[in-house]
Image (tube, rainbow, N blue to C red):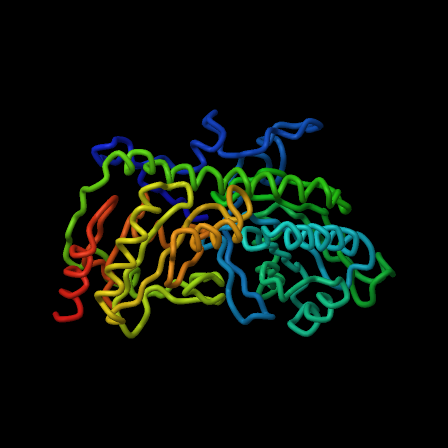
Length: 404
């Protein structure tokens, strides 16, 4: 997984220090994981032939034949549920996948589906092509439209052995019909094993059973999502109090972020609120500069600055787009309705969105709120300010871009 580091404000004077990886700080004990070791475990993780509690899950990259995309675990930033199976399995895989489908349903009902991804890897690529996996998904009632379930298919039997058996420790052995008459052609003897992996790539649980308790797995998943999300926001918003005391301290810079990182657009969910429509917008927009503001509903300076932003927007008269986003953990400390109500209360009249995965905040190092940026159409930062500022300063910064 990607190890993301966030800058944490440490003094009211605006100095900052690099916060450690989430994995080092999550539970205050130096552990890589959120969950305590299983109460019923019989062996230490090092004694097991597969990754277990506190150990990193080996990285792998496999194609999803249903989407046509390749999934690389090093590029994922969600909590993962990973298992192995084969679609013609008549018994144990049906129970295993059935339980995980129940967990997926729970993530949808609890509004955490976007924070969890299910990776079901077939070790029978000979039979499990795109058509077979699509039929299997329908038969097992997998919610593919939720967007958080991936069926992964190794290129061939050797690739399946390399990834599933050798790397993940989900052992399997192909046997002929004469040894196992339950499946036509050939069958598999295999281990039923499912991993719960936190966003830093460490195993929180290894469920060695063909019928994991869906309620318990969902509870574990929810705990990991909640704790890792809370820690991210804690570091991201740690400077709110200091910024409130700071009040000012803006910095004008030239194109501060450039290259592919600046140009690659990020889709941001926007809310139905005054001046804002439900949907998505991209940052940066392709056709014009953008004033991008990071705020929090708990920040008094953010509330005070709303009138300043409104004044600047009126003076600019459509020359630039405005977008305000919050990186607060929606569904945990705030709800969408909370954000909408805050927006109405403080007379917001432009697009308001959710940076729920902190993608934008990390990209633009917005480690304090309010932080206001002016982006050129390529996504480069031409001006940034943390804390209070006046409308004239923002108008001047935008004008330099539009008239330049």
